[in-house]
Image (cartoon, rainbow, N blue to C red; front, side):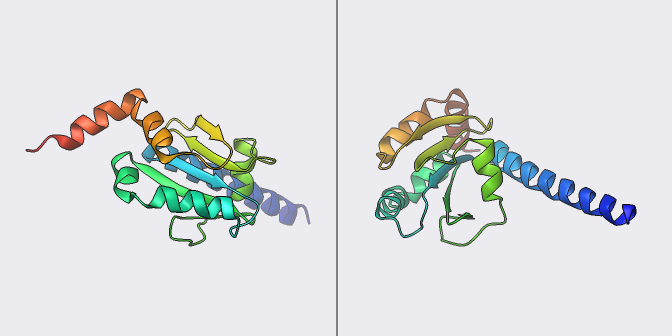
Length: 144
């Protein structure tokens, strides 16, 4: 019986660690623009998605990943459920009672947390003024 309990504990601990590592891994590769709402059908959420996805090139240039946290799931910008843990993100960034836009930098820290609707220009301007983005944009314009 103790062996079974040990393996159950080990499995639960490992699963939690994998989710945390997965979220941290994304943070090191891309900035996250997280839209959090209680429901995917929210008018505010849909309006924010529409405004942000109108210029997908702007998201790509800024190495930003758009994610939607709703209905206790995390969706990508195409509406597909990801394997990320919604509860982990909510706990990690203290988003339990929040609805709106959260911009998370590559360092994993919140750069913006604001209720819907946020003008995409404000989000892109914020990202553009993060010191590391200037180097990235310069590097991407260099042609060999």
